[in-house]
Image 1 (tube, rainbow, N blue to C red):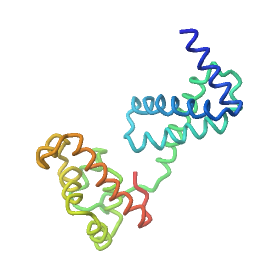
Image 2 (cartoon, rainbow, N blue to C red):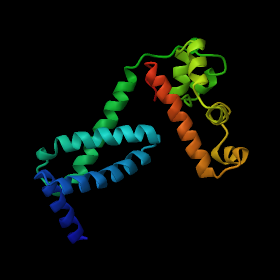
Image 3 (cartoon, rainbow, N blue to C red):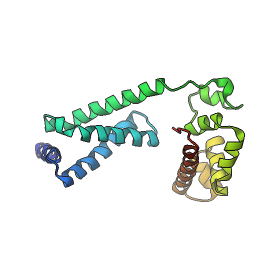
Image 4 (cartoon, rainbow, N blue to C red):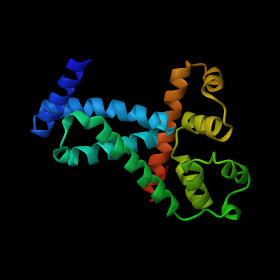
Length: 192
């Protein structure tokens, strides 16, 4: 175990010295560990990606300030905690959504804290704009979005309905959500 720690400490020192391969390896290991860290804190995959990126950027920007390379992980986890706190502070400064402004049927979702960024974006957009964005989806993407997000059927049930594997159903949902998210971003919305 001591050899492993010494090897990692040498890796951190080499990265501090500017060795490109060491920086790459340190980034690879850090991304993996930080994803686990944020996963165990309960963050969604998209938010985890953002928080991991922000943490790694902060850590590598300040890597030269790390005085004891052997304490790399405690230092990085402290940065990760600061990134988490900053994220939550930013969330508290965002404008509040007034429940009466939400479309019918969304009140209970909002109150139960299960509302997604897509729902909030839909709530803010006028009906015509939403129709245009939905028209931009492929027919199968529209079906997947309506079944999974609005009817809240799970991946297993969706895979049976689409006659595909669970993994394929997950990938289709991911692609449909990404397409919808990209459309909202193109219209100027911020989507969680």
